[in-house]
Structure formats: C-alpha cells, structure tokens
Image (cartoon, rainbow, N blue to C red; front, top):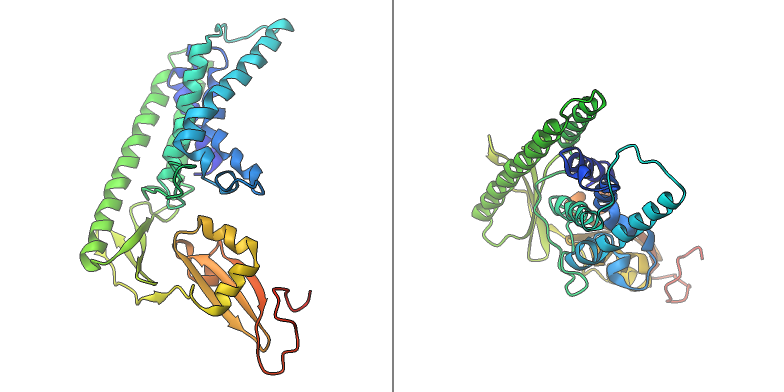
Length: 326
C-alpha cells in the first residue's frame, strides 16, 4: 500500500484509544506502520533481501520481530532527551516503555498485513525463503480505504479538540476497514475459484482490483510458459478467457540481455510473472521485460528495458555485452 494509507492505519489505531497508553504512543503507531519501507533506501545493498523491496524488512523476522524494539528504543531516547531539556508535554501522559514497544509492534504488524493484500506481494519469510505471498484484496492505492480512514480520523480529532469523547469514530472506522477488507477477500476467493474451474491448470494466479471499482478483478495466471487473462465481477462472473500469451523468456536475445544487464536480473528477483518483448534490429535487439500482473511486455508499467548486440550479416562489432553506442 501507499505510505498515506499506512500512516492513516497507524493514526486510526491511535485515535481509537491506543495513543493514550504512553507518551510517544501515536508516533510509535504511525512510524511503526511505515518503518518496513526503509528498504527503499537500500536498493544497492549487496544482501538481496534488503535490496528487494518488500523483502526482509517486510517479513516476519525483519519487519515484525526485529525492527519494532529498535523504533521503541529510539523514541524512548528522544523522550529522555526532551525531559532533560525541560520539555512540557501537553498530553500529560507518562512514558511506559513496555507500551511503547507494544505499540511499535502493533504499528509494524499493519504494514505487511496491508501490503499482503495487494498483488505486489510480500516475502513473509525472508531471509529464509524468497517465496512471495499475496491475498489480492486491495489495489495498492485504495480510494475507499482513504475515505473511511480519513473521515474517521478527522471526526475523532474534531471531538478531541472540543473536549468530548473522541475514540468512537476511529473505532468504527477501524471496524469498517476490516469489514471492507473481508468482503474484498471473499470476492477474490470467488474469482480465483471461477478461474480454476475454467482453467484447471492455472498457476500463479493473481486477481487485481482496479483503483475505484474494488468489486471487480483483473485476472492473470500462468499456464506452462504462457499467460492467460480475464476479468471477474461478482455480478457478471468470469469474463472471456484470453488466448495464451507466450512469456518469451526463453528467446536467445532475452537470455543474452539478462546475462548482460544486472538491472534485469534484479527485476527478475522481484517479478513473479515475467514477460519479455523483443524488437530486433540489424545488429542489436531491444529487450523489454515487464510483469504480466501490470500489463503485457513493454506495456507493463514496471517494465525494464535493455539494448544488446547480436550477431548478424554485416555486423562488425565485437560479440560482447556493450550497447551499440557505447
């Protein structure tokens, strides 16, 4: 999910009453809810789980077990520093380190939970396993989730400002959020069952909700070395199943590009449904590798592209991995 949703998830839990447990409680919830995304700053790390977004820091070991106590410790040190400076805390809350750790854990748990609900997937057991897990219940930016969380937080804050009981709106918002997620998971389960009924050999099945029409699903799955597509709606059922599209990953030009370009190899560590397009020229080939979850070949919105030399009549360049204009 996007970081606004992650932040509002932690904030809503705080407004539901958890922020009253300790000083810095709201900070622990919001920062904990965003903390696993620290891996975006380690894209060039030599350790693959850190270098791959939604890897180690999003898993049960790194993101859930190890990182929350670090966050709690940093917030506690900040609080101690403020106390020594004579800071007067308007909330009137005391510091309870045990609750600070607990709220850091609660905030951190919301992150892989929400990310797991999207087709972008999470390596839950990194670094012990590089398998990706996904539940396909939400689009990565869910407008309805934004609306529910924003309204519930806003009402809660307004009541708090007026000195009135303020926890109920956020509690209702959190309950609606869980109900909304549950309904969407049931829709996805029904969509997956419809695909398996129509295509018994379907593997690596993904059901992607559109940004606003969250009851619909764009379906894509693997059959051997090709992919099929369809749509699903609980009102109309499974739409027409498309022809099997070759992933082209075994083409010589694609294998050559992968061997020559580390960017493509890194992309393939994340991609679950890789699909390649090749444009052949006289002495070179333009290779685009995307993921079928997000479009076809070079039309995939996350595609990576590379240029490689190929042998051919009249080609005088060396058979190395340099692009033609290097």
